[in-house]
Length: 392
Image (tube, rainbow, N blue to C red; front, side, top):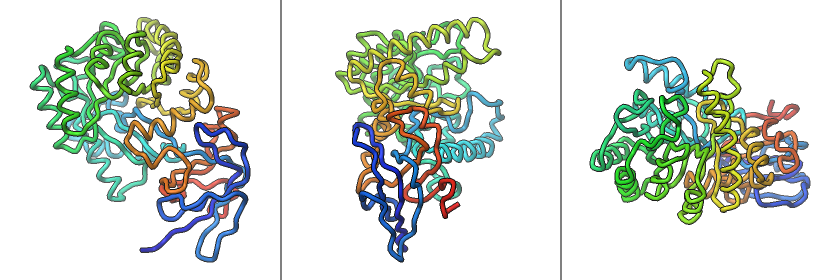
């Protein structure tokens, strides 16, 4: 086995929860892992290479915890016969952009035809470069759900149990349920889609199989039922009640925000007036909910939901809602690692996976530094060298 050893010079390391002063640092990676972190800029030996991120601040690789890499519900409709090829090509492009922007882990949130499972297999076989993927297969919805065309329809407790088993058989790594409507639905985004008994049946079956359950829920009765049923994460969650949030804190339920998706609907001049009004109200509720979630100690992660993940925007929304810079950085790194079951990611630490991002600025001082990515390493492989680096 060939050992790839690198000495990465940087201006300092920023981990969430650590407020030490920035000092010149050398991160030594060996193959996929961080072998050592040494003060100062140490020169490599003859068997190692040097990566010069001298003036950049290094943070852990970013997590986007709610995405649809096939863009199946936002891009042009694709006939069934073309789904495999078109979705795969879309995913290759989307995943490449994630890496360039410092996102080294993506949790997909469902794909038509469960194509995301095959895409992950192609990634693991080295057919294209991309972030590590966590995939659920389909979105599971009730029959006639607004976006049923991109979902697997299932009704009743027993049908849902079977759907969960089928997803596990296909290779799903977690289960995704649609328990409230969507922004573009005929009613409100808070309209419930499944009964408590249906959600509970899916959760029980998934947990028995060792799978977590994530639910699409903006709020309302659907979210309340899901939290009571013991789901592992609420996705979107723009408007949650005090009781919902209290129970999430008790249960250890994650909150996965997708602020930009709602903001884009509000900012787009083509958005119909009715939806614009809903989006405007939802933005206000988002900040109220985020504030309460933080105070309750619920762990927060974030994602882009097919709208182009913007870590700076998600983090800025958190800051506006009372989060500290360190808490916002945690939502984009270590919290994502915990949600995805990756205990050796999310922190720059000896023995951890060498997913590293070099920034032009300190995100604990200026959160917009998250948008100034100048270098990326995924599992020790340099994806995007810094300007002026010998690797360019």
